[in-house]
Amino acid sequence: MDEKQALIWERFTDSCRIYLGEKKLLAKMEERRLDDLAHPEKVKERIRRRRGYFHKDILEDEELRKFMEDDTAETERVLNAMVESIGERQRDILYAMYVEGKSQEEAGQQFGLTRRQVQYGEKKWIRYLFEDGILNEAVYETGKTEDLPE
Image (cartoon, rainbow, N blue to C red; front, side, top):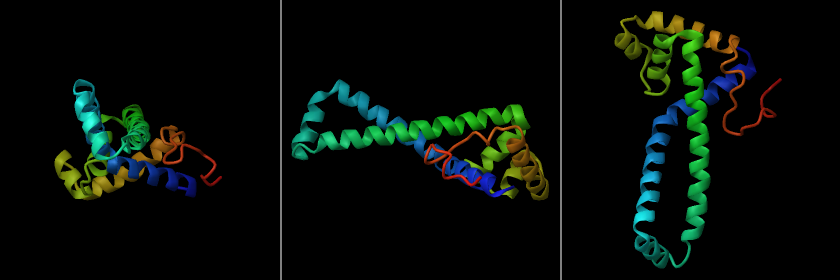
């Protein structure tokens, strides 16, 4: 894995680690938005308690929501594209390790493999993801390729 691939892989795995948390937070934000629409008096009360600072909170929530939606969408795109490149079972093993936070040994037990088989497979599958272009086009955090090494 070269330096650029290592950076892309690091960014992807960072997104995987926070993926489930972002999904839960997005669901809570949507629930609150729907509650606000159904009960505008609650919104007015929050604005009154915060002495008018609620507008800033809404803008910051929108920026955060947009970032999390983009990040989870890109993570899902890569996870779905993995099936075409390495297969569903292999994707599920990487999902268990990088999204669910399981060790190689735990993932191996879940899928009837040894830790060594998972370790060997992981390296091979990551190489295939780059060779097939699944991760080459993925851009994390900044959304720009300028900060990636040539």
